[in-house]
Image (tube, rainbow, N blue to C red; front, side, top):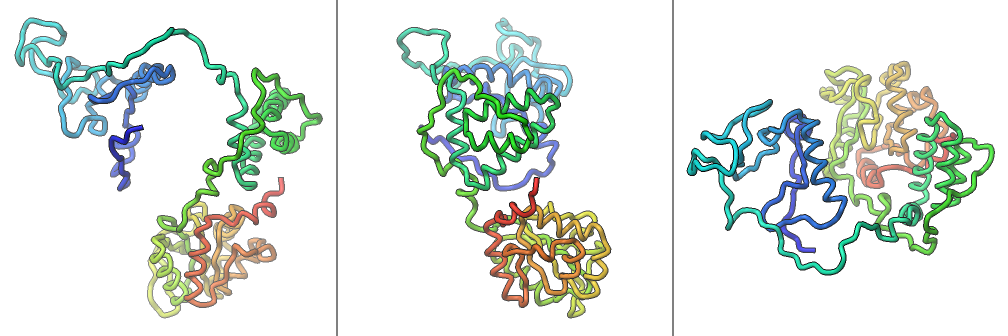
Length: 383
């Protein structure tokens, strides 16, 4: 493999529709020096991608959209008129070859700088066949599954159970489980239990036996290759009037040092008045800033604020959802009435960290590097 460049993603788009929804990737768009391989999948995409963009964007003029236009060159062809045409070629001819010549004759190919196919030497028979490995339908899936951590394997089983629970025909559910038996027996049994199958099916007939000796590859696991910091993540902080100004300042300082962001979730968007009399601006109103928006949460309240929010359903949802999603939770001692009302006070674990002083915030943010407290999952996921 030869490295020819690097794509750097250094900012968010200015307008999602203009720069993301309208982008038209097409594998047949090549520059000199790059050519297609004989891969049949790529060859098929060279045709299908164009059809896809014609359907998605509604016109062959999708290359006139700025996000799809070259930055430092002008596209010259005979295509003109039609929906979304931003410019048309000059001249009397919209076909080639023609005898007009010059600007009136339209663009011409450049034998020197234009595209040329790579003169690859080939030998041997060209046959329409598939490699024998195409008949091995299960070995790759097995290697992927056994390369996951126990937590990730559980997520795979839960996802399969969830999706198959939407299948109305029991025989189809059992048929999928019969294929899972060719991947991993424990996975198949877990899914069968989750579906409450009355009997375990026989393994599906396999065109080629599964390679059971493939070694696990740690590189395939997300959790084993997770980030080493909490940089770029968000902490949602539920606050109330009377919030300890020192605790809040300590949390903000620790998050900033980590490169993380703090978003204030308040009972009212106007914010709250902290214990030192300062106003803390709100980023989200409690009923519009659920904990699912954040990677970790903190609940810093006063006694009066906790009593008020304990009556607010969305405040209770804020903490119960964060707990159920195995997120790390920091809290001040005054927040306990809200946790008790939400029904999680007796279940709080090592992923719930009490902030007694501003200095405790650094330890909390450091713990958040793990992203989730997965040991909690067995307790919050009963079925």
